[in-house]
Image (cartoon, rainbow, N blue to C red):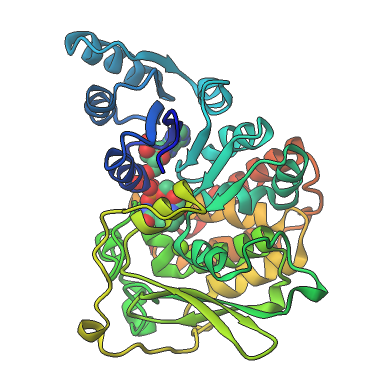
Length: 399
Ligand code: NAD
Ligand code: MG
């Protein structure tokens, strides 16, 4: 049954890969969803195209020159969308009274402020921006608790866990009957690569993911397996499951998106083709089901599913993530910040692929990653970790 009036959606990060998948699902159901605001960082041409197609009330560009360009493009196209600029405007469209649902699909720490603003305002929040949760864990979940907002995971693994948990599940307790969460991972493009090969990886090779088509930062994270490490931290905060009960399973076909192992021996899983429109449609319509445009799963075509243990030696980012989660405080904030800096340097040709993990490890080894109780403390730790990581990057360079 379509809603009486369409849900008004604010899409943070509209020009990215998740942004495109979200708009694809929304455009299939114009009776149910309407676009209230679209945001992007610098991609003015792309955002202009989207404004002309979806006619949002607002468009936000965080980059000031790009905002000017967008205004000109929209005037030429006679589009009535109002253009806003800057980081504060992201928060304004995220908690505007006219918006019902916020898709948090900005990449990296830049998404924290508007996502928290949406949570605090009690919006329905669809969370793709895992870095925001990783960097501010307890603070973020406390804000969810206080506002009572409905938070839906978009990351395919977490959405699969969400679908495999009891319908009224809130947070893991002694009585919830969960033995483990099994987070699946494709293993990325270098699952079988030798340590020598890993020394010479280029950004293009790292971004060529064998299963998923995604933005460049998350593609590199998948290649180092930092993505899975961030997802372990994300699963801990979303579901309240201790780190020792979250296990990573390499599953190269990318068909089982994750599982919940219960104490009676039952394992519940969610399966589907690797297509982000599936978790997006699930979260948009929950508890109903919505056609997403994804292809139906053909088990005969897939024929076999396989599983392997992760190689913590070749992919140290995975162990670093568990370490940061166990240590607590601002350690996950520092892990995320150092990783963002190191990945950006790698993509710019200024850091070798294997040095990404070295930079993160060196950053975690510094002292002083204790408190992350307030937003100020989180932002201070984030800034300090970035400045330390940048020094490490200068020392190590592209070698
Ligand atoms: P992307 O690089 O394709 O898009 C990023 C979006 O964020 C763009 O719209 C860009 O304009 C915006 N942006 C970038 N920097 C910004 C800044 N400083 N301020 C404001 N906006 C900024 O990224 P993506 O692959 O769509 O990923 C988005 C988020 O979703 C990430 O956190 C990623 O980990 C998560 N995620 C993505 C996938 C996927 O399949 N792509 C799957 C699971 C989770
Ligand atoms: Mg994922």
